[in-house]
Image 1 (cartoon, rainbow, N blue to C red):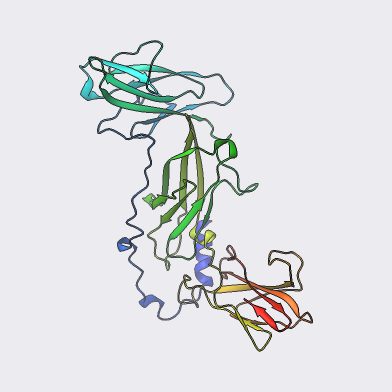
Image 2: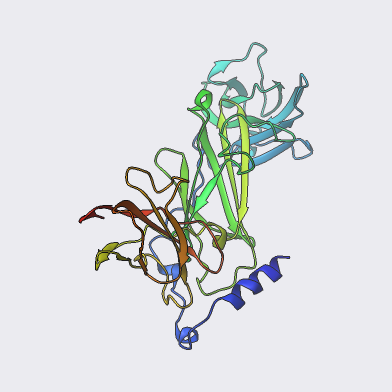
Length: 354
């Protein structure tokens, strides 16, 4: 199914004769690709880390010092999780704390079992028994299994999922965003995994923790045969939720707003391709939707005087109205992907403002 789709896209694009002579941009040397790989941790990991016995099928090591306990929804679960302070402390007196506090029932020894009730995980630290020196730690997070009753992120709209991604062109850079629910506004991103065909894609978390910017090193002239796979691990207290999204870059490419919109001869509007759009335009072609609405209405209005599509970067308006708003936006004509934001001019008799 995927192969047919990519072949259809390739046959639609008309490659110029010189296209094969154009080398793909070396993204490996791009500063964007050199962004630090995103591995976010709630707490700093030590050189050696506490771990869980791998024989526990419902316990997974997500990353250094972070274990995930999977529990069924709606059942009052009580699970024991085995922890180890580390091989380096095998023959030393070790005591344990939870979230910085002494445990009601003291735990001693390099390897212990801790009781996790329902969603009540926590940060378990091990200390040298003689002087209380910190040695290591393990964070236990709890995830529902199956993880289909999410409460941390808002769904964009029914059927649209929780993560929205877009790209301005085919150079491989894309931006994904999400929104926390009002009651979980302080939830934190723990880890982001992005890859295509088992190859890691470099990503960087936005400053507010509500999105990521990624750079896929694929050449824009190369056929997409594999989807980009994205997983966001986000937690609040001990509750962990994982949100996934899979997509082709061609599905999320949204051109930037059209620049240089102007009018000539009183009724011919013209514009340019976005500076960020791929060249040559014969291969990365755009089509344009034009709309004319009454003055005072938004370009998003469903009430319109004129609605049409063109592949030219100009359009002649022949309407009886002398007060109106001319709107134009673009999309990739080969994929019929997302439209750009509207660009517009307001016409008020002999006055035009773009």
